[in-house]
Picture 1: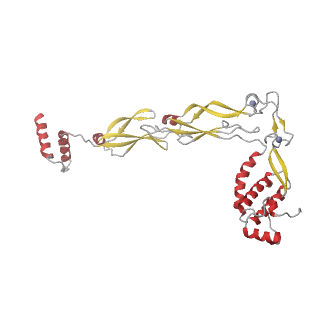
Picture 2: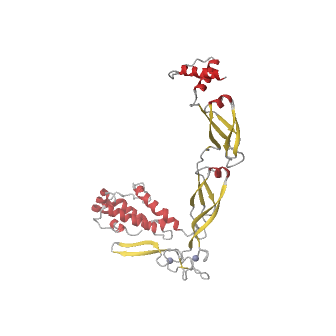
Length: 380
Ligand SMILES: [Zn+2]
Ligand SMILES: [Zn+2]
């Protein structure tokens, strides 16, 4: 067991340091000495525990005061010992952000192959293209492993050599002697900038970057039935992997343009058709536009406003599987507003023949209609 050291010394702060200074010093040291960041250093854990214990006592003004007066015996750690693994001391909140900010990024510096990043692009297609599918060529700009050096960064015919200073790990441990004690920290190797390898002759194309930016044309196959917001995955078309890792994927997000007369609801295509009151009453045959062109529909006699006429399987194909949705014609009955007096007389007669009594609010209606009646009678 190493000799117990002064808590202020451990954190490298003076005895009158502010709480903020103590917190800062602790965070820095905890980051440098955390066992997970120093897998090859067997002493890291012990150092980390000591630092944590020191912080636990000094972060609380009350236990700090006791420590100042009575030393370790007086601090809240007390007899029976304090287990530095017990972070339940309100310490977890403080640890939380260290774990997030540090270990999130820190772990990624491992030496194994790393899959390349995924990329996302957007693509807009027409309503019909979404319905029936389309193949499009898209231009993307992405990083790729340099083809000249195959991603090594070294001039062809040469190869990178392992850094002797760090032995290829990219990390070096430095020991600093200060009046407050010895501090060890781990950081990127200055010789190779943390890469673990040194390139003596750079590749002429990528200048040692190992990557080049390329514009590529790629074919995107949009399947029939695709909906706005769907993402198509193009395996292996994303960013390049590291250290032999596979490339990431490219996701193409599809936006579907609206249509001037069609509206998609599920796999059905809806459109509107305005018909006159006479067509509604008597029935008619009309042509309507569908995805497959003009289609004749039969409007039955007595069709009501708001009713729907379905044309089977003229909708959008199902993305997975067979078959299509329907085309649905939404009927809007228009009541004639431009009736002449002759028309009105005919309608009035019609209504009376059906036993309906009608008293229009219009001033002088009957006189005018009677005149129209007289003329109509005279003409025949
Ligand atoms: Zn190169
Ligand atoms: Zn190195």
